[in-house]
Image (cartoon, rainbow, N blue to C red; front, side, top):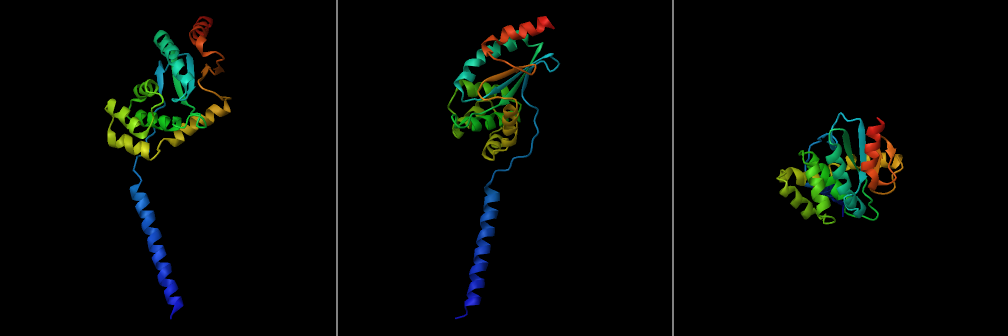
Length: 200
């Protein structure tokens, strides 16, 4: 029996199978274009006061903080800029990173804040089907949103926020920074912002 000949046949089959698997994997992976959407901001882009919120959609304390955040936005909307930053605590909130990805997929369609509100309203129901359902409620383009979520296209965006938070000493959520200064008690945000405006 010609063993070298048999060896080359088996080797060729393995190579063909490997190439087929690679091609199949690449084709099965959903395509999503590289979209560089503006970061989510509320309020006045020209404001002198900037409030940054490092938050986790699965975090109960972050949910509790939302009425305070909504109140300061309503009160100081023309004098305040709110910047949202992702800081999913993945070791204790296993669905938070996926929710953050979904919010960024919504951001690509101009509906970050609407999706943000739905996530907190439905915390912690963040299965893939539920995240797709929230997109449907907002009339987002279903195929595009699903491709974005399935491909984890916004991973680098979320990780960049997490890295920034780590460098700035964030170790819990929610964590707020008011004009770059870490806020020790977010329940006093309204008073702190008012003092900044008065102090001028």
